[in-house]
Length: 139
Image 1 (tube, rainbow, N blue to C red):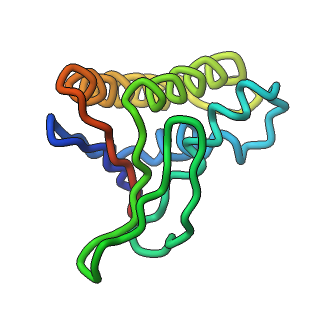
Image 2: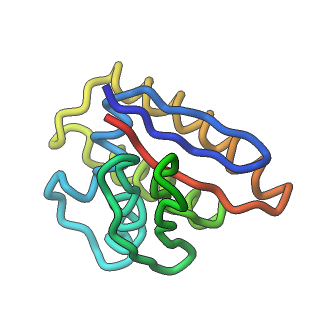
């Protein structure tokens, strides 16, 4: 089981779907041929750190990895809500365009769409309040 945590001071949601993790967060690892714009967008998703194992500091357009502040903390990807939404929408489009070749079932797509809707709600709350969002995952 994988839990993807998306949070800001305006709200939070934890995605508990392995399909979401495999086909959205790790979409860039499936081996699809992506143009440079799509690849740059899904690279943000690939940079989401594992809460207990990833201490690598990196950054990109509209995002950065924030290292743990203490032993009780973990690294997170900090992004603007707009940048994360763009990456998720790109991943969604790529998944829909390649669902057959990738082997995603109809049930998995329904689950992924439901999870995306909830995450988009968190992003909207953060954007309205003017907060960045933090994302990490635990497996």
